[in-house]
Amino acid sequence: MAKIHGKGVAVKPAFPDATPRKKGVPSNGDKGLLLYIHVPFCQSRCHYCNFHSQAFNQVTFAWYHKLLLQEIELWGKRLKKPVLKTIYFGGGTPSMIPLQQLSMIMKALEKSFDFSAGMEVTLEANPDSAQDVSYFRALLSMGFNRLSLGMQSLNDIDLHAMGRPHSAAMALASYDAARRAGFGNISLDLIWGLPNQKVKTWLDQVAAVTDMRPEHISSYNLTLEPNTVMGKLYGDQSEESEFKLPPEQEQGRMFIYGAEYMESMGYMHYEISNFARMGFTSTHNSGYWNGSDYLGLGPSAVSTIGRRRFNNPRYMDEYDAYVRGGLVGQDHENLTDDDLLKETVMLSLRTSKGLDLKDFKRRAGFDLMHRKKQLITALHREKLVRISHGFLRLTKNGMLVSNVIIRRLAFDTD
Ligand code: SF4
Figure 1 (cartoon, rainbow, N blue to C red):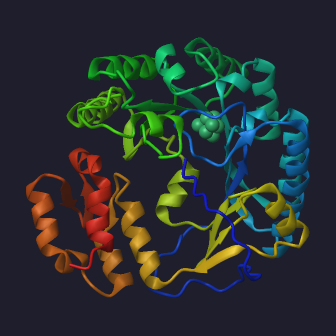
Figure 2: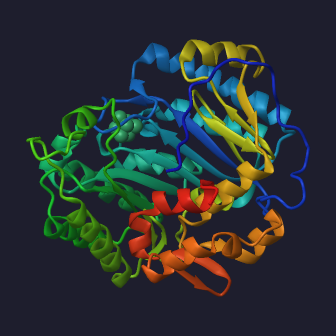
């Protein structure tokens, strides 16, 4: 999921207003707001994770819940009950929210926002806190129609190495229970590039997962964050280190063969890490990549409305002051034309659709193909990008080095 976290630093009050985006800069173009709710609680800390979350306890959760309900009401009033296109509960572990409190959140949302017909409503769930058919039935009755299940691996050794608080059997049981309850849109998260993983063992997992026929698969490369258990253990990949990840070339093969296998099984590779069966791309995440406006609620959540980007305070006491103060004290920035254009390049090149060159020229006032001619010619020669029907796209090999290509295209001044 597209989670953007930032430590909130209280500055001056700043609220979105009805100011439209200036003509000529990226805009969402379609109606409705994406709503993200951050749930900062987990059973324990996974060894690779640096998302904002803390161990669940009743007292802190009750505090959070009360503030979240207030924040929902305040934003609903501030934005005059806007239409929502999607709701996404992410975290953290949203499936740790007790059903009664979750129902209260959904009711508060319904009161303060306008739900669009057929709105996508997603809950991220972890197998350790979502096992029963009755639990999933309750979610459906509240209006959830999409589930993102944190399976991560079907191998218990991998799960143990990642510090996940569930086994493969629990993940399968959770998936099965959700299906039996009637969920018809389930996304499974997987992580590749793990210690001791081989191309073959990864492909065996991909085959097992595609055989389960989830509607959507998010397949992420392990990222080593410096302040995590795995980051500290595997951060040094020099010759001398005894803790090794699969070599770069092997990881490259995992990405390409895994993606090709999923495509052969009917999954469209629509974003670097995301695959979907026909009709099941994620509306919420696609909205981020298309530059739609989004409102983030809860500690550390980020919003972008028009040209303004807001960062909610990260810690509970700051979040408390911010909500009780009527949404005052939120860290924010005003996005410039240049910021928005860079984000367009950055986000659209992550998708299989790619960057619309004509549209970019209209907004930017210059032709990217002309300005970056040498670079794009070299990337094309190396088969890292393709240009067709007016779109610039990354090839699968290009996706492997997407960060470098995007930086050169969007940020370097050559
Ligand atoms: S469950 Fe998710 S958010 Fe929580 S610690 Fe693990 S990876 Fe992080």
